[in-house]
Length: 269
Image (cartoon, rainbow, N blue to C red; front, side):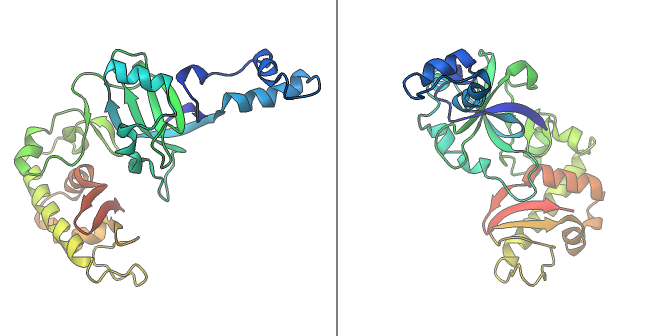
């Protein structure tokens, strides 16, 4: 988990710095009718800066933009942006989240800083931090974020060594996550996932979060259910497919947060 200093509703990146007491005095001329001491100016300067305490953040989605888009964005942070609007739901906080901010990472490989944006439901950069790209592993090149695009066992196997951003795992490969599972294990994990997906969708017809009667150990709202690893494994006969740790790691890395026909699936222990 990373930490950074965030700013609330800055108009541009240039505003994302502390105000000096002298700058605060200049900004307040004509508003405050008395001479302020340095002690009185300090909290006002902090407010004018829009600076918040250093906080934990999680990168939930990475968006690479071209140089001109990045530069315009950095100068006009309060303008609505399509690339924020299209992914703002990813910034929504859920119960149990540790990070204070769930961020879209806006970056260009030629620029020094990535901008971490928590839109809090808006279409503009409501909370922003700037973080040097060198502090963030592999933001350039062909790095992307895994977005549930590998839908067959063959695609999974073909991409198992590709470095991607996996939700909950950071930048890594599926091979590393699975402790170098072999191809047959990936095929078994995919087959077991298809059974879990079908069972998850089927239970929605009679699912009631108040009764705790789910055979998959599901909890939460019907449209956002968390299944319990040990329960769904037993229900679907996971032991017939292979190693519990390897197969569940593969399935969870590839499908946690995936939107299925009857709701979004997540995993708990």
